[in-house]
Length: 117
Image (cartoon, rainbow, N blue to C red; front, top):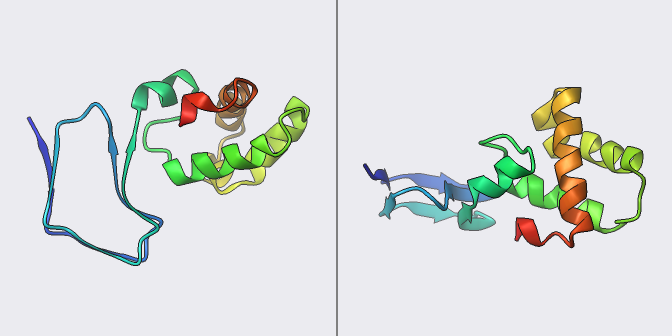
């Protein structure tokens, strides 16, 4: 069964429509105004492997990865502090979840971040 996204008027968002790459989706006649990115497609399997919960805002994940990439040799504690202070950290909220996600993001950053591209 296809998911149909139709007739929306989206304004002032970072991302207008975000969809997983493995879904059968039809996007028809939507109005996007003043959005950073109209349609964002993500791979839910990569998120799952890295411990990132389904529904985590992709722009926030990308934002924190960029911050972590600025200092890839930082200690795990320093990287955890970066994630905790980020918008993603606020979205995650739970210290255990932040630690789980940080562990996955550290692995991705150490691997050159290619898993998240």
